[in-house]
Image (cartoon, rainbow, N blue to C red; front, side, top):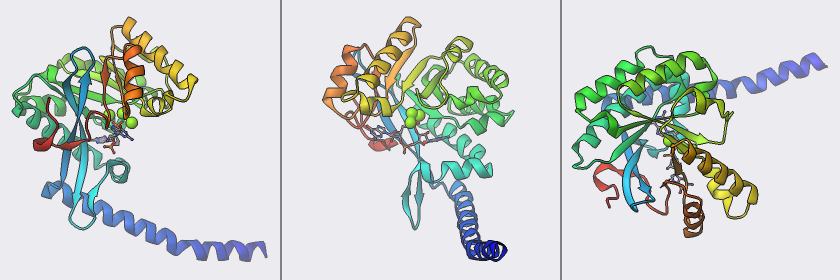
Length: 269
Ligand code: C2E
Ligand code: MG
Ligand code: MG
Ligand code: MG
């Protein structure tokens, strides 16, 4: 009986697995095509400097303009790109586009590009970044690379070495989504980050949760004594802004200041 159930289960689920696998394969082929046809573009979200109340730079966020499905968000294709290895090409595209577009702005504003932990497995990563800078003639100090704590978790010695080589190019390095994942203060000793981005879940909860508020206060306090910039992500309300200002957070990013927009429509000062 158990055996028969087992076989039934197998027979029942197999077609679903096939369908999922087929969908994935189709999407992988679509993504390859997207790379060739230039359907992957960047939207830019402003980052505000609290001291001057001005836009100090933008985060570049990838969008897939799919001919049938419309605008596809990163959470719906970055994981697939990571699993299939396409992230190496997708990531290089993001770097090249961001550097070219930022170089054409007549400002000192910075551009931040997200790096996947998978890109750190590519021994050519530093060269790819150097080439993007060289081809676009963007000043290295105007480029910021955002990594997450997971980069420091796997192969941390090798990846810290890579971070140091990236930094030697003159670019800035930010620690994204701080406070989620496996945060460890030892990361902050092993590498001199230029910026910490406080995860938006804390900003979201802060106003109602004294615990979330205390954590935000601790992060901004620690960062300022280490002379690391802090960006609060996901700032949506005036109330959040007031509280973040009171705590000495140095930069803000969120819908209150602007949504991610295509390069030519991006919010300017
Ligand atoms: P992230 O790097 O933490 O980017 C911030 C995300 O928060 C963006 O989502 C942004 O649109 C969203 N956001 C900004 N302000 C607000 C706000 O006030 N409220 C809310 N609810 N959300 C806000 P998005 O564009 O969907 O990107 C999601 C994630 O996908 C990014 O998180 C990043 O991890 C990844 N991603 C995006 N572009 C790239 C890329 O070019 N390469 C790689 N490897 N990952 C990327
Ligand atoms: Mg980011
Ligand atoms: Mg983030
Ligand atoms: Mg995030």
